Image: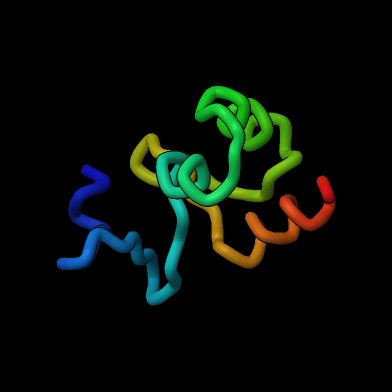
Length: 69
């Protein structure tokens, strides 16, 4: 369950590294959740699926956003 990876503030940590989930990326950048998932699946956004949930390191997400600008 992904909730096991969240700290008391709701941040997701895996092996000592902070990750964004699709909901957080959706709040930070105006893309639909399904579009974000499609980009993750195609490799346009570099991420990995952990416990059935797409997770992205903040650096990788902002690289994607910068590339769109």
